[in-house]
Length: 241
Image 1 (tube, rainbow, N blue to C red):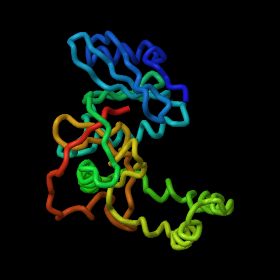
Image 2: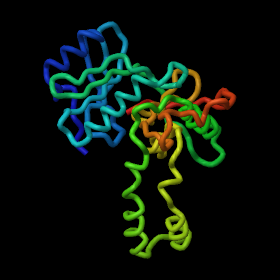
Image 3: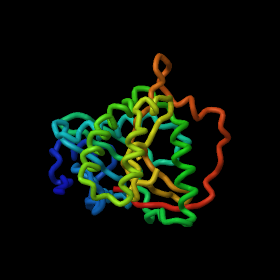
Image 4: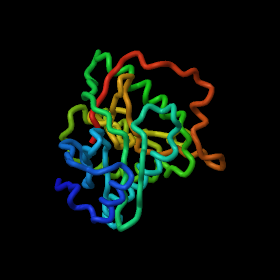
């Protein structure tokens, strides 16, 4: 994947970023991650850092950046995530600055003390407001057909188990009111993009927002209300990308 660099941003966008954050003395592109846009730590003249994500507004991936921008604006302060500090959709780019927090990768192997903290984080995200988040059904409706094509090859271990699971699949089962992270994997345990981080207390992440809609009802995350909040039992972190 060829990723856009700081230097690829229009001068007007770079000027706007520096007007907000201060002079950028160095831009360090993140090595990890799958998104094509700019993902870079910006070293500032005052010795601080911010994390930049940006994508051309006419790029096929731009809607993902717009969705992340939405998430950054609406997530409550209690959610453990690097904060959105600035954003812009001008000059043909979607651009965001977040607080930069350095850290290590979480360990999701069986028995890892990081796993309970990640599970706690996923539960916490379910208490976030889901107003205006796109329904998860729009993202997964094509997956059954893709699954059938893969199963038709007949080369998977435990083929019968996957066939049985797909036979029971029903997108209607996703209806609800909880804000979901629909892109969970080992490199992003518990966002939406940016990646899991820690500033000295627990796993941190920004969810990739999707909602499970309640037909005829208010869009949101009422399903998580009333549950007691628990502090994460383990601490872990990751530098985001």
